[in-house]
Image (cartoon, rainbow, N blue to C red; front, side, top):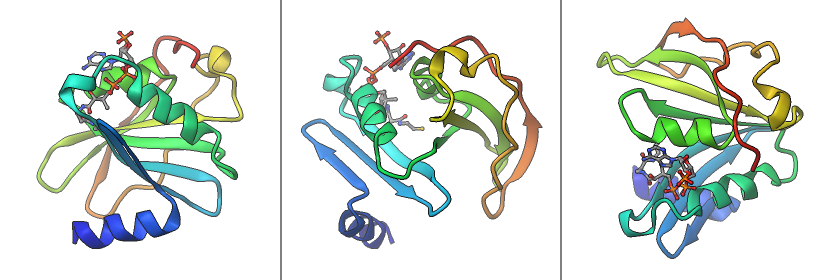
Length: 143
Ligand SMILES: CC(C)(COP(=O)(O)OP(=O)(O)OC[C@H]1O[C@@H](n2cnc3c(N)ncnc32)[C@H](O)[C@@H]1OP(=O)(O)O)[C@@H](O)C(=O)NCCC(=O)NCCS
């Protein structure tokens, strides 16, 4: 249930709540920080709120890489690319929706990330399958 998921994240300190913005994430022991949800109220968008969240998550102790999944048809994909994530793979859910897997390796500077070989594709979620691996796209702008 969403209440329990939110409550657990809150207790772990993995929930960002600010006026007009929220983000829930999970940091694994291996250093992968998965951004579960991020959303900014429409009237607060395009003012850097989500960029600030990504910057804050990049500084979480123990985080080595940030991962986000975004349905391929959402405008939010342009956000992930703009803040330095690289499209690593596409997955397909059971319902047939394509989901983009975005990754930002915190050990690679954003200026060089786009020219390096992509990492191994992250493991698939239950019920999803890989559609294709991708090559990194245009260089991201530095946060
Ligand atoms: C995606 C979302 C979180 C971005 O939040 P935000 O605070 O507006 O993002 P920022 O202001 O930090 O944007 C930084 C850059 O990302 C890019 N960007 C952000 N939203 C974009 C959009 N809708 N279309 C194209 N580019 C976008 C732009 O390059 C932007 O810089 P600019 O405004 O100077 O052009 C917000 O639009 C949102 O809540 N959307 C609905 C929920 C959602 O889709 N969440 C993500 C699911 S994976």
